[in-house]
Length: 152
Length: 270
Image (cartoon, rainbow over all chains, first blue to last red; front, side, top):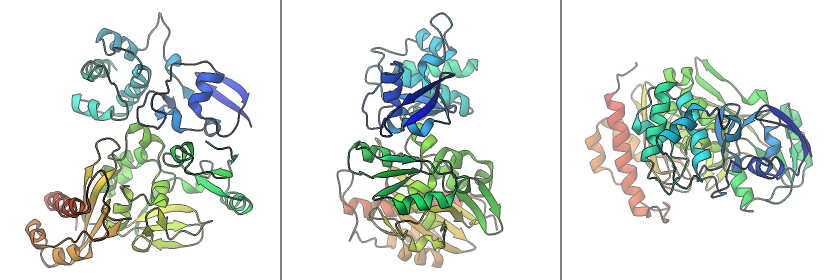
């Protein structure tokens, strides 16, 4: 099936099978390997990307479903020398250890600070229930999001 | 995932024609259950008919009869929509407890109700609020909609277009949330319509149901203490790694009490 897919403000035309997942297209067709396949069962959130501005798990979305939508991945939010404020906050607060969950955490954190009012540490923890981190114990991740929320 | 043909119709009749013409078709709404199920090869449809292009399944409207919510409305839209927060806050609060944020951004009210998962939250609301399910051909009372585990009154080619809820004077929902999935081990929604009490229970049995014995007691005496003397038999309740049938029967009582306590603390709108 031929589709056009808008990823990080670039439209890509490709031919794919309808049973191809969005995360597969991102990683294997477009070589955007920031979205990770962690559990592949929509539990862990490592594959989180934005679809029309909202966080979704790209392992639970078919690529053909997003033909009319705008997809933004971790690669689309900042540059190495011009990081997104959430990326800066994660670096400043050392909000990662192995880094596997980090792209998904950051994409979900941006959704959270954009759409949730009056964030506090409890609300941030609840907001991360769809993202698993097995290293940090979440403490520094919560601190990073708290500080980024204050700046936005 | 097995291969299939993908269709994205733009009008309702086209969706129904595609369904009728296919060998083993399935409708796709948010896909938060269907896609993981297909990935596990527990479902292998020949044709997937994506409903997201059907505007008739979208939108939220208020009328004298209550709120009418399009089947494709996502859980996060229900949780945050001003009309729902103002007129049916219990439904907004319930929607905010479903799954996680990413799931709430994709999953839909129509998809959840059509699936009749025994641990889903919306069925408790459909039953507890006495809502109805509108399809392309008829309106089905919530009380008659859920038949069994993953089984509803929908015919194979029948599509939910909207869910309609009458507005109670006051209502509250309490759930015992599975820590990992967010699903309700048991959930109870209690609603007061000018003294007529309805109680919808999800998670306990094979599908959501009314707790008529509890309703009758509460209509005699609307107090939390009354529930101490109500027997909740566990016959037919689910028993799995999350909870035994006996524990679920206990939770029905505890969560109905919690919901009722919340309800009684609200100002009566009537």
